[in-house]
Length: 243
Image: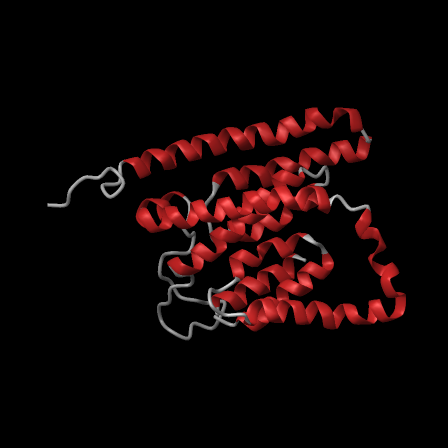
C-alpha cells in the first residue's frame, strides 16, 4: 500500500494525474485508507486523476466480481468503515480548508511551521544522475501537496485509533518531506501497541492508547499555539497598514 501511495504522490509532483490516480487505486485495492488521500492528489478543474482512479479499480476488480458476483462485497457490511468515514469526511474537509486558508493569508509563517521541507537546500542529485549541476529536489508547491497528504493520513489514523502499529506506517513517507513533530512523535510511540497484541490485553486498551495519544495531543497543542502566535504576528492578519 505504501509503495503505491508514494508512486501516486511522485506522479502528482510530476504533473501526471492519470498515473497518480491509477497508483492510488492500486493502494486502495490493498487497503481502504488511501482513498482518503484523493483531496491531496486532486488537481482542480481536471478529471484525469479521479477518472483513472475509478477505471483502475473497476478494471482490476472486475475479475473478482465476475467470479464471485456480489458475494465478494459481503464483508463490507461488517467493516467499521461505515462508522468511521462519515466523521472522518467532515474533519478532513475542515482540515484542508484550514490549511488552504492559512497558506493564502500567511504563506511564509505556515511554510516555516508546517511545510518546511528537509530537502529545500540545493545540492547535487546523485540518486537521479545529476542531470543538472544544482537542482531543487522539492519545490514549495510540492511540499504543500505532501503536507495535505500528511494532514489526511494523521487525521485518519487518529480517528481510527487502531491497536495495530503498522496502520500508522503510511504517515512516515510524508515526514520525509514535511517537518511536523506531532506526527513524528506518533509514529515513534505506536510500537507500544505491540505489547497489547502480544499479551492480548483488550481491557488495557485505554492505558496503551493514553501512552500514545496523550503525548501526541500535547505536542500538537504546543505546535498549534506556536502557529497561532506566529499568524497573529503577521501584519496582514493584524490589520497593520503597510507604509
